[in-house]
Image (cartoon, rainbow, N blue to C red):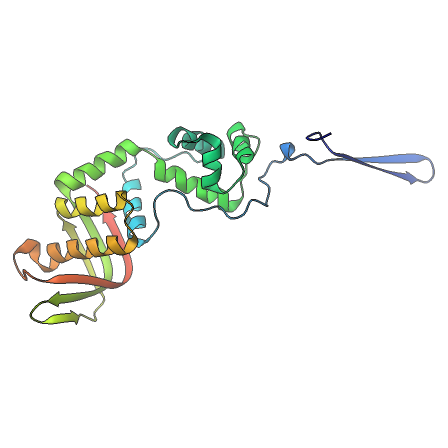
Length: 234
């Protein structure tokens, strides 16, 4: 009947005397790993990109305790953080609602690699929202952000036009709380990577090349060929 265990029984006679019976249970309730036909899991949480990822890493450096690492614990935490219950979490992870319910119950202990990575990433992205809020507020009001990058800078002034310095520079500079507030607010509001890139370039231009507004008043700074970019919160 629908939903019942499917039993396949094969009888084979051996030497005309003994009967061997093989029973195969085909019920996904008994699977210990996630079925492989769910499709690739999407990347949940904030938008991804060089700058967004760098800000995320900096926030995680300030965690006061590590996020949950077990499948069941991660699911329980995510369900406490998102709206829509198991159906919404299933959509975020790219699996069925029933699969999420199995994670929650502990009957599926080993998700596929893509699902496991997506779940761990989403858990870390959602972890310790109060800590995140505090360090972001402090950066936007008091301490600013420390930014380090290796890239090629370009410069523009109304008098000289555009020029590029072909050197690959490593610049590490603390940007002002006002600049940090602009960057963090833009990220929070879903700005794309190009917009964040421009805000970071302007912040570094003001802090490093214009020395906080004490020189090169009309200079505009761009960045290209960015090899890495890191952020640090105090």
